[in-house]
Image (cartoon, rainbow, N blue to C red):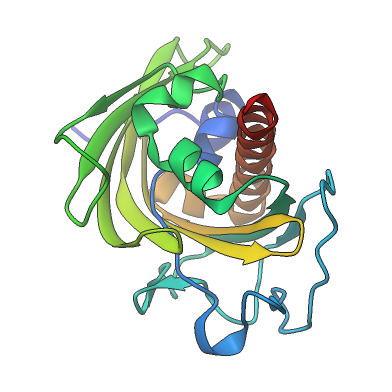
Length: 233
């Protein structure tokens, strides 16, 4: 007998941030841009402003972010990319983002993180993290478990990880790329993620919107944490 699945609307509405926090990583600007003149999602030049509090998003970028030549899933129907400038040193931003076991201290949606290996993140490093999913009239309270594996990484420039997020009636396979570019006034952080899976593909506009909201929330939290750590020094 096939497994009963909760309606997509019920599942998605209980985990808007979870959809945007599924692991996978990034790539440097590379041939299309430089640290002095970063290139925007549509290929146009971007002039970062120190401590600009907003994030810029695009669900259908002209080109994908990559890390060591690998990017997100080009065939995924659910995809989003966003960026912001963080007014903190590159080393601080990198440390906050890659010290995954401390994510719960600055990302409210993250309940727990456990490294499956030791030492600095490197190719092959893996970590398992959880996010609570509150009850909904159509679904019970549960927890979303995400297992992320680093596939490509270049210290201070990019990281790309992949992995499934699994909960009751829900499985999402994600690929997530992050790039770090030193610019005037701080670090230009870019992130792009794709999701595949029956539940998200059943309602692509809703899944894409929730992915956008999750990625933007992550960048806002990262910006706040890195800038606070920088100003405390």
